[in-house]
Image (cartoon, rainbow, N blue to C red):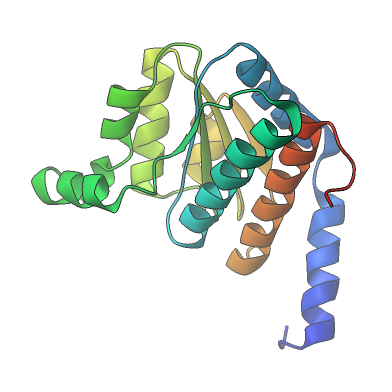
Length: 188
């Protein structure tokens, strides 16, 4: 399909309308459950998904505390460039998130992975390590779901082969989570 503004908006709307509302609700409820249990929530991804992971944690940490007064224990594993490059240099880029999971997460925490393809090796490894440690796993992936859809305990599948549409859907989900956690409909 040739890019036009109209085509992009139509494709965007079709994909958002096709999202499984039960998967989204389950994801939001899982995040609420972990948050209410006082456990840590970590998010990671590569490229645009890394930026979205950072956006999630920025919004959730700031807005939850401002609107509820509650502490939100959220971290983005994609944000610490020093740590990422140290692991990439000393081990491999495939280990940049799994090594952080080993060090920063524990049983009953939550690892949220964002991936357009569902096959990013560093995110797959992080999910495998999290599963081994008893960390709950949730992925939001596109394309055919890839490996992440198969190995994650919970998933939200964006049925699109367009990376930008997949990343748009990630942001929509992150904003829905924020609104639910903050218990407000409109931010002024």
